Amino acid sequence: MIKLKSEELLKHRPCNIVVIQVDDLAWHQLGCQNQSGFYETPHLDALAQQGWCFAQAYSAAPICSASRAGLLTGLSPAKLGLEFVSKPSQAPFPTHTKLLQPPYTQELPSSIPTLGDRLAQAGYITGFVGKWHLTQGGVSYLAYGDTNGPRQRGFSWTHGQFGAHPYAYSDRTLKDYESGSFPTDGSSQAAVQFIRDNCHQPFYLHFASYFPHVPLYTPCRWSLEKYRHKNPSLTKQQITYAAMVESMDHYIGHILQELEQQSLASETLVIFTSDHGGDPRHDITGPYRGCKWTLYEGGIRVPFIIKWPQALKPNQVCDQPVGGIDLMPTLCDLALIDQPETCDGTTLAPLLMAGDQIGRSVPLFWHFPYYHPKMGYQGTTPCAAIRSQDWKLIYFFEDQRSELYQLELDTAESNDLARQEFKTSSHLECQLFSELRQRDARWPQQNPDYLDF
Image (cartoon, rainbow, N blue to C red; front, top):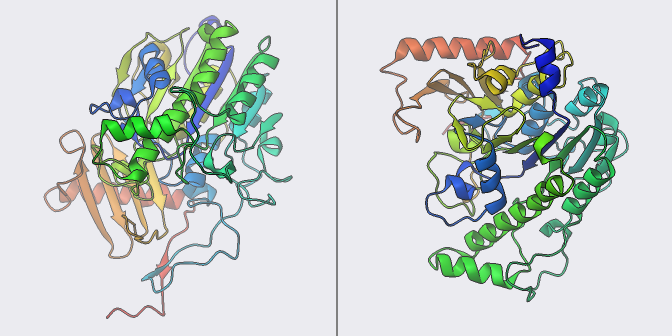
């Protein structure tokens, strides 16, 4: 626990905690982080102005289930053995690959405590709304099931329906909604109801939006026309995606507005982030290389905002590297409870409460021992990565080689320094392998049937 006086900790203990995690939103797709002005996210832009915006924030993985598992447990997906998307046991592997990837994992290990478990122990009423994606126990796509959903993992109140996301639509015709109006969203309404029902007691709400993940669709004709007018050169997919980003922001606005209406905004810690980088099939090129599924910055650097009026000055930008994996130790510290015995994340509490440097004993690292084939867009082979200070190394298992980048000078990761900085590259490679071995990481294996023509 952080070394601050107990009375100071009690003074700053958040009355309420709201974590908002969206799906597939790239770092540059917030309006406040996109100089082009194309994407419109007024509610999240306002949240950034009211709190801290982190310029170097990372997801725990470049893909959905693994990233969510890391955020909820504070453990590396390598430790959890959940490095990909939760899939059925009979799901097919890519074929004709040089390496054999590990088996797919179906469930988040039941023995690992989640933020729901820990904050419930601290006296918070816990609620989970939206995308779980950490089980195959449900009878339909993304369903929670009865054995390893959020209700079994520390959340006393749950709501998993798709709301206004296209997952829920069978009729995908355009509607003439009034300009600025959106369809009713059952997910954000459920989150609002949770706040109303628990406004007189400490609560932790985890809102996992299904937006702006595919399938791409909006019923709002006015929204498509607006973004088509803003940039007529874009594809229909890119225009529809921008409309979905604005819809996402609108529904999150319902939650932020409810905190204001219940006079809870000043005493609520709000954290916003994305589960990983953007989808290359409809993204507009951002400042970073790569996309979801890759360990380049475009796959793992994500938007990250913290608003906490009790402790943080508004409208600040923090350049210290942080990760979604840091939420478990951070929120345990702030809730005045002991951290789990094993934790790969590092508490941000000294940074938030005293402006100190983050004392990271475990470096930020990633493990993706899977293939994601090219399907008209960028894919990847099995890889792992580590960041230490300003250096970032990516190791590719197929050809046993590393790439090294100095991020302060090369955020686009265009200048591989592995040969010029051989000592640094070798040191980081050894450190990466050490971290993975300590966590009994699963490795891709040689494929005895592979024919290299």
